[in-house]
Length: 298
Image (cartoon, rainbow, N blue to C red; front, side, top):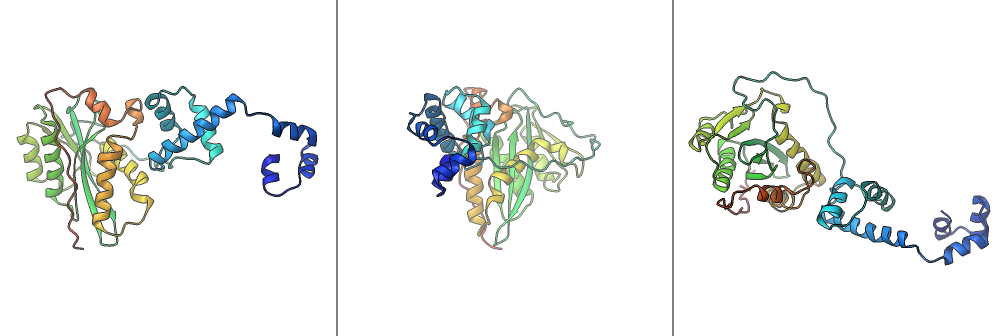
């Protein structure tokens, strides 16, 4: 406290008198060598700052603690990480506002019934569409997420939302995974997902279509959770000028950050890519991803 006041220009003797500390004791404290504990805390603070910057400013203390202990093999407590982040003025992004909703009634063709936990890959895929504005107009993104690894295995971006958008995302997932027959593809009752071409794409791959209750986001909660993370960590952090700019940013977020770098709390703080890779059969060779093409017409 005295150091901060002195740095701000306050006289040493005034600060010591107000805080009940002798000047001799204060100067002895200033000359005392830095302890090993304090040196380690300063070192950890530097690492925490680097991890926070590498996470694009999104990580809170839990994910930073996971990166230190799992990624860097540095033993420390989560409480210490929280204290050091508070002292350094480092914080993660706030989570979404939780709203209490009434439970909907599942439809007859809902094969998931809000039970999203899966132990094997390709057993359940969930898919949905999100939108975000730019100065040129809206950008629409459809994505397919594997419920086991939480990895985005297929996605498509366009300036309009139609059945082609969701079919392209599903086609990317099918080509990457080559799933065995019997898996479930779960979506909402949007016209794009209930279209003949989309359901035919599902059935031709040997998969089963599933739809939740109309107008109830909880029936596709796992996909809504991903959209919420992307909204907080990417979309709402700036104003986007063009569709191409936003499309490239979404590509970078999904393929570079979310799938390969972002530690997921539901996966014991592993990344979706590593979790997926540990459970991928050796005969499966996922295809690479390409940068998106987006129409620039308003």
